[in-house]
Length: 312
Image (cartoon, rainbow, N blue to C red; front, top):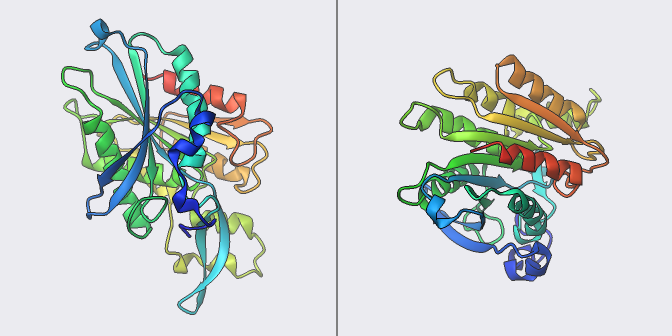
């Protein structure tokens, strides 16, 4: 439901500028492969000295938003589950918390490292065109990653390190995008261009969430899997990522200790799946954090910054 709450489409970056602590964000427009125009919001921090630019490393973080809950809706005469973004998918309200992470990185950035964060507005949300669907959002993710790899790279500089950061349902978008990358694009050394995968308050899949939220066998919701329009199955994506021909991305799973939406079993299951596949994974539980508070809690922000600082 892209326009819920009302006026979410009219949110403006400049309305949140004072809350961003000096981090400057700008909107960019790009085209997905099917011709749908989507919006990105981009900010960079740069501690690089001009004489060190050729040797400096550049980490591009592609951020996929979340904040979802589950509601039952009737469609085509069949009761099914749909995902509903409480914040209307508008990116500007998220910029203050993302700025906190960038400011923490800025304080610790060396003279040979640069960070750029690219936040993706899915089709049909905020100022992006089109209508949302799992396939369409997958195309949006691919277009944003292409932008990060090509448009942000400067001649004679080191290749950009790509890290995908997904929150809540955005974690499903991130794992699906990583799976697509692992099978379609390789760098000259035969390795995937993806360096890292940050999964914040993730769930295994939409179907798994239905089973977790409605464990009672007498309720109909747990049996609605065949009718789902969106699946976002991170477990399936992880199996694709574990491609022996490519270098596996380092993965961090961040869970909120007091998550009111996603059961803790979901992160545990993703961690176990990753370990069984031999992926390089670490899971951290952020104390006293609710579903949308991981990045604003000091322990969660510290974990994110440490993870991103690990790429050079």
